[in-house]
Length: 415
Image 1 (cartoon, rainbow, N blue to C red):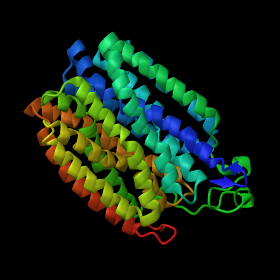
Image 2 (image 1 turned 45 degrees about the vertical axis):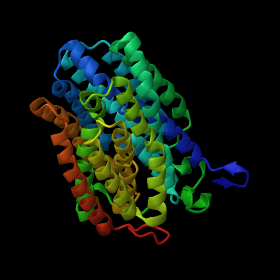
Image 3 (image 1 turned 180 degrees about the horizontal axis):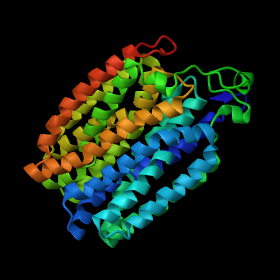
């Protein structure tokens, strides 16, 4: 991590990305489910209709993702993050003023663009550019903050909600997002060569200052490979099941007899476990290969959802949530690592932006799907059965994607 007595600047990039993940995913995405029930009840919306606002946000992320990837390739990361931070925090302030579904949908579109440009795409592009080796560990550390943000702001948000109502909770989230996104924007640099450095593990400064020499496929070339489409289908189906469970965990636990404080605590635990889970998955990917990391992630997904069937027991609820937290990493740590292996680094931002499009499409489908199944059946359990099947399908697709990839893993790791 150090060269002489100096810390490699890439680790400061990781620190800045950690703060971005904390806010853009941990708060903006992983904490808003505590508002689904109170906002729906206060304004007379059905859960399916209100959670469709999440779908609108996901569509905005999906449509903007390829352009965001290009933006990080061509523009100063500091400026991109700063503008995006203002957009994201401002959208949460606007939520407090919304009173109709149309208003929530419109603001959700703004939120989606803000999340896309400060969240997973930004972090994935920056970390991938700065690390040739130990990329899995760096990615896991940077993205682990999304769980920490959820761990902290689910109970904090629930407390503000109980005392001051849902409007104040949106404003509270807006302030917190601004705090954790504006400051780190000044630390960021798009590529090591901007500072006369090489990526971690790629040699001395000359290797980078000589110009970009990364191998990789263009978007058109990547889209002609089997591995790209297997990866796209994997992230799509996996995102349906992850968001279908995660975004309805709090209302599910309340519906089966737990109080909101316990449900928020379990949600916080789920997201808090993401901190070690993402680091562990990153380390497993570096040391034993992406294939074994996939087996770990989807095995925990199936076991976690299975335990939620018995979640009337507090022990089963906690155990299921802890295991499911490893499953959530399929939306964060693994896709950028698999994209780099499938398409290389030369056009990583653009290619990953398109992969992220499929991820957001699945996320946008999974959240309202659970809501509409609940509206039709009066229970989330039928949806959970579907999601176990999707997790198994995603695991198979992911393993085939790794085997079909063109750019192999280093250090003899097997996938």
